[in-house]
Image (cartoon, rainbow, N blue to C red):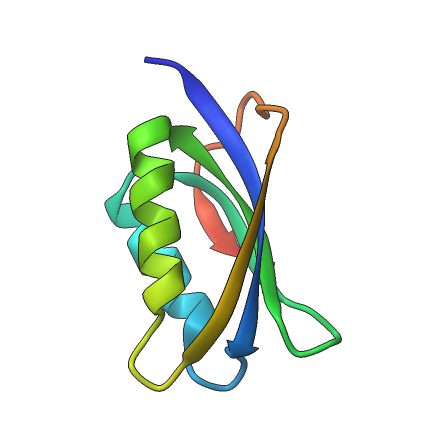
Length: 91
């Protein structure tokens, strides 16, 4: 199965609403690797790697977010796969 990796940025009310822990839990459930972090401009960004179907499902989860969040936009870009990464976490 072919691996792909994306970078993503989530716009909206996404800081202070447990978005990063939500993102980690969903990524782990989909067997993705990568990371998520808050940005200095009030967004959440990160990278995720896994199967194409898992990435697609993950982006759908991110666009909904946790109940306290209000996601306005999800940006994504395909990037190069990283070898040797074994987990998904918060940076």
